[in-house]
Each structure stands twice: as C-alpha cells, then as structure tokens.
Image 1: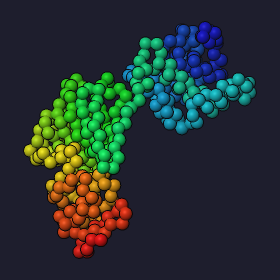
Image 2: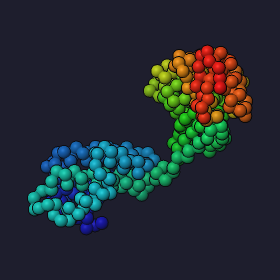
Image 3: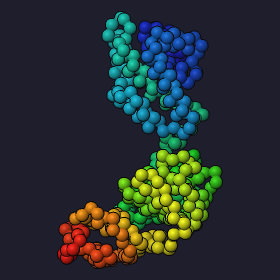
Image 4: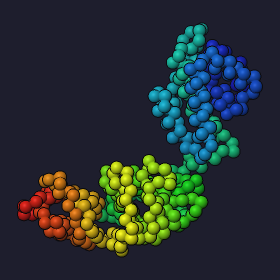
Length: 357
C-alpha cells in the first residue's frame, strides 16, 4: 500500500481507485491529496462526479450500510455496465496505455471514476470501526397461502397474526435502528410499546404508527386500507403525509384510508367482529362487494367477476365460517344482496336477475 501512496499522479491520467477512495475518506497524505486536487481542476466533470460520490459515501457510512444495495444505486445512477466488469475493463485499458500516449478518453476516465464508486462506498462503509451488521442482516419475509393464517413473534415481543394471502416483511435490523415493517394484505398486531422506537407498518399507500396497542389492518391493492383499534392509540396517515398528519385513532375507533389518500375516522365503531377473521370467521357489515371479493380470493382462491361494474358498489352484511364450502359461501353472498352467480372453475361471475348455476 505504501507504494500506492507515494506513486506520483500524472495530471493527464485518472488516479486509480485506491487513491480516490483514500481521498474521499480524508485519509490521503498531504502530497497525494494535492495531486488529486490538481488532477480534478483539469477534469471538472470528473470533479463534480467525485464530489457527488463523496456525499453518497458519507451518507452511507453515517448509518448501518447495505453495501450491495449502495453499489446497485451507484450503478443505476450512472447507467453503466456492472461495476465489477467496468472496473476490470478499465484496468485492462490503463495497463495497455489507455489507447495511446495522450490523456485517456472521456469514456475511460468516467468509467474509472465509476469503478472508484464501488471502492469508495465499501472503503468508507466497511473500514475498521464501522458497523457492517446491517449489510449482513437480511430481511425476513413471512407469507401465507390461500386460506392459511400464520402467527409471527417479533424480537421486541410483538405478535402478528397474518391473514390468508398476506405478506409481512421485517427488516434485518428490526429493533436496532427502528421498528418498521411492511405489510401486504391483512394482519392483526399486538404491539409492545416502546416510546423511543415507535412501531410502524407500511401497507400500500398507508402508514400506521403504534402508540402501544392492538389493532387490525385490512387492505387490498388499489382499494381502501382499514385499521380497527382494539386497545391503545395508533396514527393512520398516507405515506406522503408528514409524520404528524392523518388521524389519531383511539381504542374503539376505525380508520379508513381511501385510494386518494384521505383518512376518515369512525369513532367508537369497532366491534368484536373486526378481529373475528383471526379465529377463522369472516364477518361483513355493510362491506362493499369489492371488499368481499378480496377476502374470498384470499380465503378460498375464488375470483369474483361482475356482469356490471356498478354491482361492486353494493354492500354485504353477512357472516361466513372459513371452513364452509365455497359454493355455499357464494350462495350466502348472492342471497344477501339479491343477486345470482355463475361459477366456472375458480371464477364466479355475479349477475342481477339471473339464476345461479
């Protein structure tokens, strides 16, 4: 390494990646730093590029770093070939003289700086004394199939019951830097409160933040997200809102986030039936048929179609035991709204004024 430090830098040629990495990290000897400064003054485009990488590297090093993800972001930023391949090509070209005795081409210089990005981020992020634990910790994903539920216990003592065809993603550093999870589908949360590390759930366009509580979340892509609070307090807001936005929901309140990002709070509207699905019972109270369709898809793998799209706005009030045969379930739903259906395989089409088959 000492030979690398003492080697002079030809102002017509780009410094190698180790020199640039030391420079970005502030560990260059004074004479080497001066030579890099001189080279950058004669290559203003590369100077700007290196300054941007400097900011990126310091931001990545200021927290637990996922180095591989950081390198992917650098690669995408510059729209180049994979970093390792670019670095290898650059080394070969420089070893061969860069195509002549003059200064390297614009492509060669920029490619070398891109290759330096990998070294800069890894050098700064994983140097002695820094913490690589976030890079090593992989996220855990829990997923359920059609008609299946699962109970998940987190390291902080919180318990989650996943509904059918639902997916929970827990970051590898959960409980260390924070307590944030992502949800697709339905889940029941029994959260252990920690005032210093709020528990947050990202689901679709909604963010639910616990203030020490039990609550359920029901969601469908491009549909509403519904939160029912059994105990404690939660905040429901759109992901684009400020942390203090949205609405605070107390025990007994139900919150609904519409597809357009509006939050509607229904005070003291929660009943025991809101969590009945955790025991295998589906209870619908004035539920839009589109919502019922989502639940039947998760629990039975059946897809509902509609001869007329306006039929989806009809509401359903009924209860269903999850173990009931699907044909019985479809008849219950159709009778509750005065409709009929045709079933073909795993698709049932609802009609107005026709007999079911």
